[in-house]
Length: 346
Image 1 (cartoon, rainbow, N blue to C red):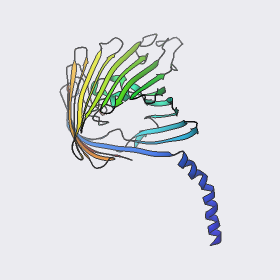
Image 2: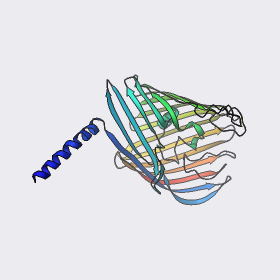
Image 3: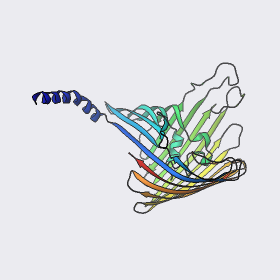
Image 4: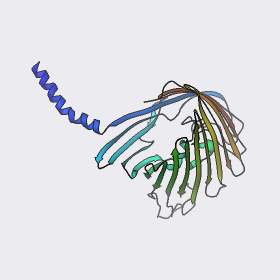
């Protein structure tokens, strides 16, 4: 008995520093599982599809994050977040928001792969979150490269200045091409900046993003030129109703200016019952598309909900708006989607 007690005491002494270190500098495992079953159909266009049932992952992920107190008001932090598909357990390690940084009274600096400041402003006014049939942040608004999670990025996040916050990100030109060839002179970089005001019931934000030589153009020596995006986002809360809006203009090399806008809402009308809806429109020169989405959500708890939604996308000839991910059909098609699903976070 005494030998057992001594062994337990020694083991406790050995592990105590580790436990204390973890308590002082916690590391957290977290994640989300979000899956829907959908009935999807495409009428007309270049790739019509008859009605079919499918199961779709809605951006499930698993992550680990932690901090270390460095003293003097300075902290180190890290996050590794991996997307995975619960249907087949596929995924790529740390392909979501992942990086390492320092945080102090002056703000935060982070190095790694993360949502650009422009994408953050889109997400803030999206009533659907990551439900892809109605999602604002993907191909639904034909935003193309202006809704992205960017690798090799240096970001600065300001502290809260009486409701105002600034985010700025830059991707250096490590892909620069000096040698001769079809891409000689290519000097790619990315800059993204946002300024937001959030206080009480009001959220308003402006974002600007520039991509230099980010799009490959066959046989174009000197790179692919520059594309720019400007966007404004707003959200207003009135009791249990939130009204949201977004407008963006995106200019790409050798193409017409893209324009898109979204108006949406969510309404917690009775306890755990929530109604959602949005209308979205995108134009690329003359052709345009319209997206209509309505839905109902039941919040079992803060971590788990059930959702049902219906979405239609109407494309003009030559237009190819689609769902944020798991798109169907081709150019000029009219899409419809009914989805039911469950989301759980931990």
